[in-house]
Image (cartoon, rainbow, N blue to C red):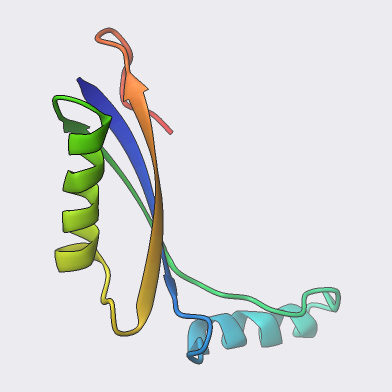
Length: 91
């Protein structure tokens, strides 16, 4: 089975996000004052092969916890979508 995976990696809420703060401050300089918080993270799209959804979940969990995210400062979420044999990988 083929799966499309979207992984979102964000800094933990209790940590400062200097990039987010910079963007928020610059939005105010553009007179966009309705934004109260900005957090900046990473979005990763991938396609993988697995026997079933459980195996795909295990693969993504391992990739995130051991390579893609730093568990000390980041948290992650992901969505799996099964692809048909003829469906191209897309978001």
